[in-house]
Image 1 (cartoon, one colour):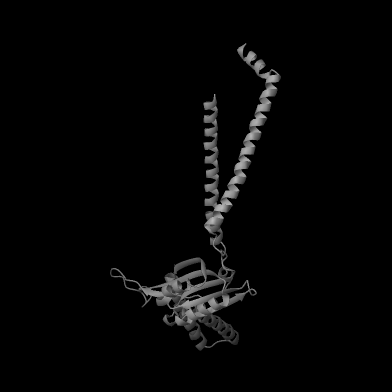
Image 2: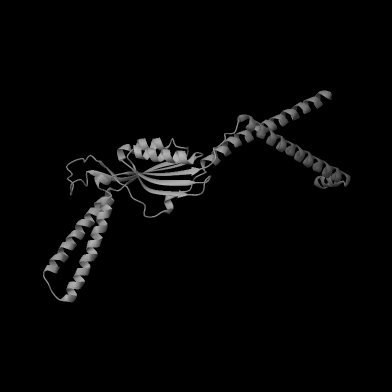
Length: 294
């Protein structure tokens, strides 16, 4: 009798210890997972995505042409045009110092700040920079900027713009031909009303040609840049949570929910016992058995 009681106590103790350890390990791992997830999603907003008319930077690289293919126009089919953009988001507790460092790095790489926006008051400031950098220096500049502050998010995208470049050139040739035809008509003379209408059409075509010239100018070799979108947010330095503190929190949480589990089990067991006693007193169980045997 005594041995059976000891065995039951021993089994109950093992199950209780196992439950407590399981709760403790779960809470400890959850602490690490929750802290890393929170720190990784601090700055998920895209500042530049909400701004229109930002400068477009394009670069080019030579592409080997296979077979006997001959390009219709020089430097069009044999050159790939692309837009390469890097986005970096950092957090810093030394805002002014790091702002100076970013601008000093930009100058040292002969890069150009094409857009700058500062937001907020001291203690909660932000700076957003759109930087054009030489394609040959892009990778080094991108890696160097990651050393400023605490890196929160980074991304690089590369979009092929070769077809767009070809279409703009084709459109330019078409408009130039149209302008030439209109100028030839103008030289033939005619009624004043026709002359005025023709002159207005020529001005409209010239405006289209100027607009195309601006767009194509971004593709020129001397204007070739890759883009770096840099956002820096001011904030207090993050304090790392010590392992001892994590142990303390995990123990407190485990004890709380272990006791809650024990109380719940005892309450359910007591409720079930009371219901069985009542059922026995009311002879419900024996009555059910009799009806089943009949």
